[in-house]
Length: 205
Image 1 (spheres, rainbow, N blue to C red):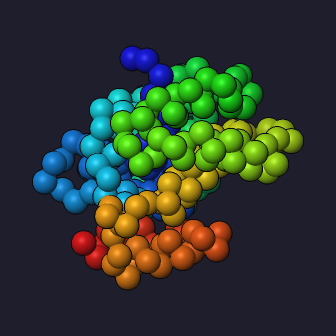
Image 2 (cartoon, rainbow, N blue to C red):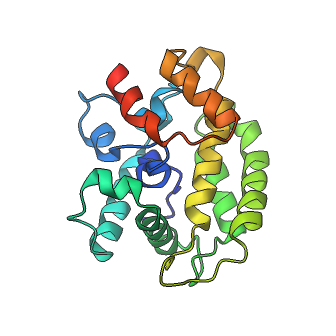
């Protein structure tokens, strides 16, 4: 299938607990509203082929991890589930090693290639990737698996960091300036928790 950028929102999973939502809806149901995590920057990236491929890999990981029967809301509130799903996706795509640590060079290449489909993201991608690698190295570099945290959080944290940077940098012509999207950007700028905004943004459209 080729390497798929794990940033896709369905990122659902990834940005999941923090801001994402039901990825499959936006990909497979064209008459259903777009996912809340992408709605505040309407540049069309969520309609790419990358997202459809991501859904297939995510579904396989959810099944392999025994999470297929876990309710969506519970999944989105459980960071351990999200870390494990993200780690699984990254490993399947050759973007993480056996410990779940990201393979920086390969992932950076994949991110910049996929971001090249959206013109405004091209000059920003390289800098954001480096910044997010630095962030996750500082927060997750010393990760050691335990009974409470079996999966490496690095992949999840990297994807969220990248999504946050692009959401805050979204050009005015693509930006949704609804109250909830303004609130989302303010919270992201201040590095506040945004997990409670997903349902409100989804309901607002």
